[in-house]
Length: 282
Image (cartoon, rainbow, N blue to C red; front, side):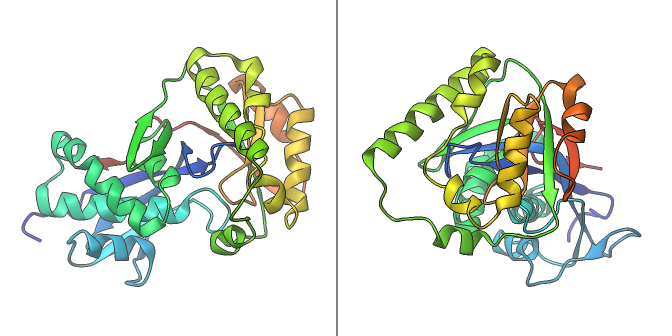
């Protein structure tokens, strides 16, 4: 390491992907973070295992030497742990090789997104962790959707885990044209509603026919949490990523009341949308 980076930390947000109808195309950064640093792990952190996603990504982008990680993102719960870890590793390697100049990092975003997508297998969650905000992604490109409001995100997190690979294996390779049209319409409606601030449209705009029901069939507590969130007045609620975590969107001053009405067989995190994406500190 040619430059002393021991005080440098890469900080990457968690994510919620799909947002209902936007399967593999929409993602949202969340205010829960994966942190990665260089050298020996400080107190409260742990040394990265060379086999783990952040280490593989770090090495894939030319990083060298020991790195450490610290995170509160739950693993296997649909909040983008692996995507955030991979983005952190890729960004850390860029910083090690090219420095932490914001202009350099901004210029490298297309390359970092391509590498993260290659490693993760899909772009929605890594794009949200890299860029922050709510993003739409397709064809190797990602664009932040302008937001007309800044809601609370109430995340219901059960104790059981979901394997993304196994969850994807339950999805069909062919679907009826009517379901495709249903989801295309609601994905477009959701993007427009977020940009225009049409809160009353969000519940309809986050309905889905492509993946949620199939995934919820093996995660009935998550289905109950979505129903409870909507009954309690959430603007919208969806299965976060492949689950089993459920995301619910509401006004900031209503988040505590909403959280109190969600099922007791999971714990709740009241978060905000992260607008900064991957950041380098120190």
